[in-house]
Image (cartoon, rainbow, N blue to C red; front, side, top):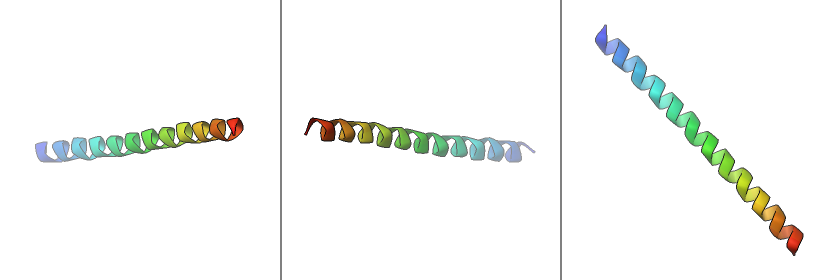
Length: 43
């Protein structure tokens, strides 16, 4: 029983970590695109 609980918590933690990484990566792309648009507007 304890092993199943530990396994479930570990899987849940990995899932949350993976989704957080994707969110941060997406935010980085958004910021990059805003910077590129500003650069294009200046030139």
